[in-house]
Length: 188
Image 1 (cartoon, rainbow, N blue to C red):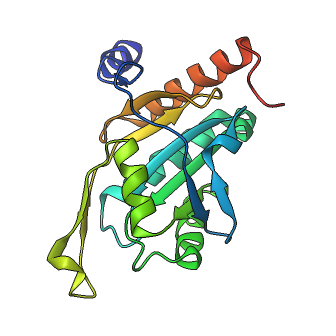
Image 2: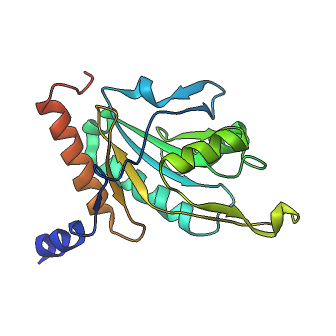
């Protein structure tokens, strides 16, 4: 029954090959360095968009990513998990570093200028908007909540809608790692 349920869920995982989604970008990592997606070639990337003050969606999304990494065990060393903040006003690199460590030590928090973040969000078709124009210190940000899996070749493989179980992400990452190994693009 569990296998059948997962197969049903996998039907909802969206293939993005024909949508023209994705692409390279450069943002600031939580450790202050510049992260360029093109430099991640040879590894599989799992990426989510959100913000550290998010009350519900982001913690659940990052928990699923962390669970998937733990489930992959040693294979997770070939995965680069990214959390792209869409709230550069509050999410400094330091704040991002503290936040992502709560979930998994390998998750890299990314931020940038509002323009750079809008560009990356546009490439991945991630909608986001600041409520109340950010006037209140407790403002919220509405944002897309899918998880993106980018193959070792740098191409976006899948966009996984929010709400699917961790097993779907694990299966997708496993498939990406297997494909990379068979294509010899997996960095050793």
